[in-house]
Image 1 (cartoon, rainbow, N blue to C red):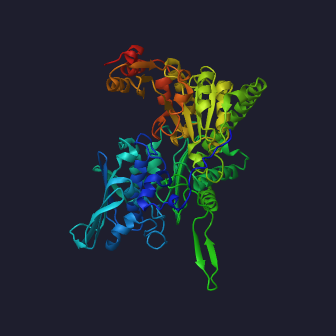
Image 2 (tube, one colour):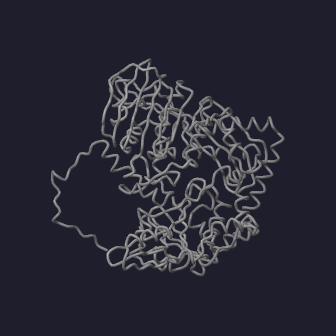
Image 3 (tube, rainbow, N blue to C red):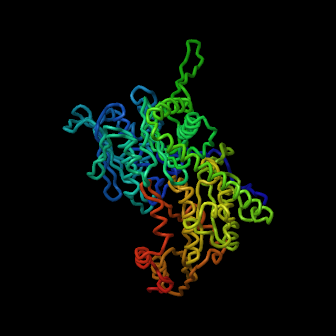
Length: 639
């Protein structure tokens, strides 16, 4: 359709605006903290704000100042107190309210810190209705208080009995984050990770102490949900620490960190570690094993320390740095010269190949266990690959393959996006629907740039009860994995958000469980990395002649009925196909409601699947009865 323009729109001097620093952050929050959210998802903005403040305190510890950090969360207010050097007293306001102002622009005061851009604390300040900062240095104190980044009051330098360090208290703005809540299921793992990565540091969260004696070894040991095939390999060197073992689960479960930052989306260091594991074991066994066979079932972690890390995005969940360090210097003639350290790929490969090889020679008892695991993975892969190929060829011959996927223009695995569309990467989504009616509705109103639709036909098999070969023969699941692009490597994932969008009835709930079971069993890292969601669609339309409300629960429905009072009509939606296209556009746009499918590292996948998808036990019957809502309960209206 041709794009039309309004020629009467004026574009003149008055059209050019200059925003104050805090207003720019508030209007363009996504540039600074990713998504906003209300705290229901791991990556929501309130957790990014919390992390930005803790990162600064951890950086102090990394430089040798302060061995304790106190964190308290009371309702919607967070307080973080460290015992480092404290912000220089005359710069307390500047350091917390002036962009591009900070002490981390060189490698002298903060050699291997996480925050390098002078933005994090300012973003917290700008997005908080109350922000208070106090710095204590050598018997003196300076403090300042702000509202949404605007300075309300500040002190002169005054005497203090407090120990050196910095205290920051903030309350995120409800206008930006809604009725948010800090969930400890997301906060506690964050605090634990800091303790694992910074041996000697104690963090107190609401009075509970977190401290690790063995670093990454503690992290992997405490989060193992299965018995490892051999004792965990733990290797440490200057600026690098790794842990490695194998289990019998599918996929890989490798945590990655940079300068204490949990890079849950990986990056150059994780890619290098995965490559190094495959190469080192292939060279040790002198066999041309495929990397995916070597890494099948790997459980481990890697942590590196580098100078001035470059992250992809302000949320710092993926490392983009190529080199361990880079430094620009000017020569007497005015030219700029860039000096670089080793590439991260070379650094990690060299460390793993040398130290893991030595470890295997020193511990020959684990060698046959590892090779047996690799050979078993190889045999299964080769068998399954043949079955999958035949299934897909059969689907293509019947033209099923092309009908099932309505693709989008941009994909998560794309290296580069067209200028002006960089934010499409995080928004790339695939809706997994049931039947032509639902998929047709979503397809009509989706954003074709970043939203794809995959249509299931009927119910896929319960993969928990079937063999891997039987699952590979299933056309629906086979083509789904081809659409996702993860047959060989999760790094080829084509969509950042995998959204299960099924009807709000018994069949829809069952299909949802079958899809999630499949992903959990064979591609658990998609869930661990936060890529899998459930789309919440309204159960009811409540309206009169003046207003319409879409309600997602009986409670919301009853509240809407009371608000409208008279002339109320209620529609119960039982299938996505019953919702008209013009209505549905709001449910998959910026305000769509998503429930994250969560899987903690320590949770046992076999135990979870046995409970929900295995034999119908008394415990499961009790669980269902306690959580079941009947159709009658949904349709009863309390006016």
